[in-house]
Length: 69
Image (cartoon, rainbow, N blue to C red; front, side, top):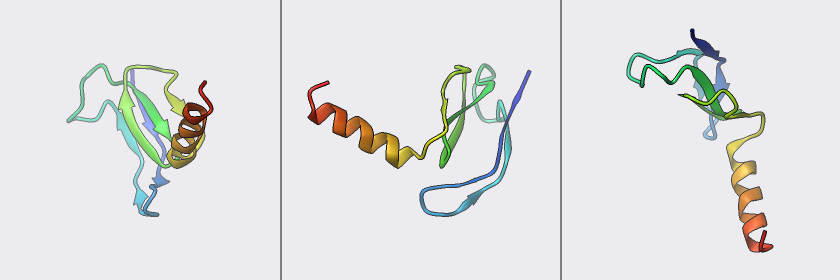
């Protein structure tokens, strides 16, 4: 079993080529494409990809922590 992480532009606007999980240098159990639209990696959780930019999610988490939630 494997998953493809499609190519994307990272936060520095550099193109990162498509890759397949698990990567040779990763844990063999990291079968899924995880992360965000601008920061992808392989992990073992099939529900860990979020179709947002990492910066947006970081900003949102900071906003929620300031609001006491």
